[in-house]
Length: 253
Image (spheres, rainbow, N blue to C red):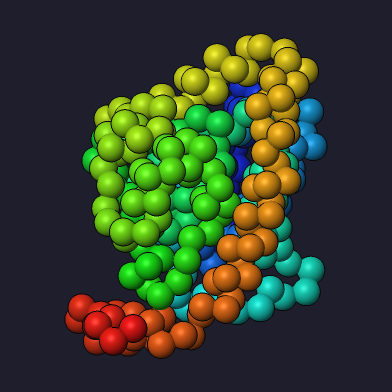
């Protein structure tokens, strides 16, 4: 069964992460299929705007721990390819964060053109608490959106942030009721889809173009840092504590 579904209506491609039983955690299949969905939306003459959302009660719970650190199979798209496909996406991208967003489920919001969040949704970048570091170019995008200190706190503290706090900080444009978040994103997408694609693309390029290479450089640096940190004593303690259902002890680390 596909873990990403695509529905094109009124020149809008709704891309849905479809692993509700796993809270839409990112595994190898998810990354590959999402990348393919963005490639398809880029090349399709039917699509002017893309909306990214999640099935079920979560937007995304982040990386699937079972596939964390696994090598990308030949012919398949991995994390870097997925993130580059979003950074290179030339059309407007609206994220409808319909629920919980953890790890990449939070940081990917920094790659959208507009993010709308469900009122009850909460977001967390748990990297420090896992002995790891941030990804999805968030070490670059978050400070642009929030300012340095708020971005630092979001990425360093491993604390939870409400949807309203994310709007206040600049990570999202607005909140709406949980049941209306996708409809709201679709209405915003419909406003854009009524406009000429050439203007949408040119304006987005003027906005993003000066930052694209810096975003890709951040992705490469983050992925290298993640590879270096994976399995370090802090990461090992965090995983052990998770399995044993206890608080991690970083007092000597």
